[in-house]
Length: 190
Image (cartoon, rainbow, N blue to C red; front, side, top):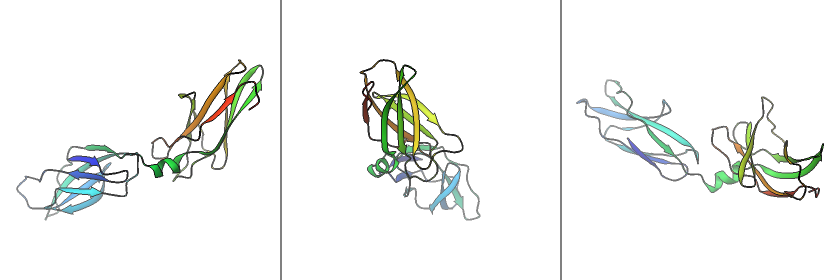
């Protein structure tokens, strides 16, 4: 089959008609091995809706005849739906703050945020410092659902300005949107 995204929550699939000589009564569309949709035997294309933005999907098609015989799965088609403004707004951590703390002659950033309100629990975050991924953190079985906090070392020099933001790894395995970016300077108490 062939396929393409038809917006952030839909894909369009098409496939050649089965040629095994039997009358095809339906085509079954499978996503990651699970049947999710069927169309009539004369139809060789469909649009699947209700998908998640920014998500990678794998689809296969099987033909079914009147006796209930099902063909082997077609080759797989892989499609990633584009992200959307709605997804970006809903998956970013909120109330993100960053404060400089000095301890034992070094500067640390104390971060605090509210996890995004998504289906499932967010257990992993990526911290970006000055435009680059600086560190990842993974919470164990007790991932925070209310306010989360994290501290990390940023050096010993005073007067250094840093830009920091975070993003979550969503339960579906895709990265969520970034939090607001905060700017802090070591040695100034902000």
